Length: 64
Picture (cartoon, rainbow, N blue to C red):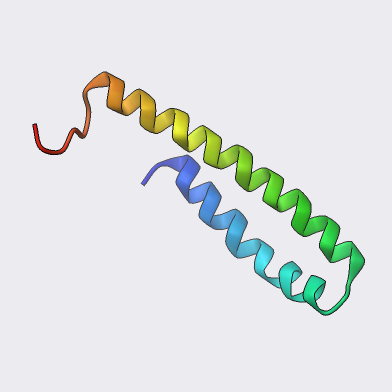
């Protein structure tokens, strides 16, 4: 598992409580969830880049 993937999982897990608070009407929790989702987007983009680099370097090519 890559460092970025571990960071993504950690971010999602740490946001769970704020999502529950936001659903209950806490506006500050809504802002924290929005920020966390922006972080998730950025981390996911980093993972995409990392996977493309692996593919282009010839690593982990199933079926070959």
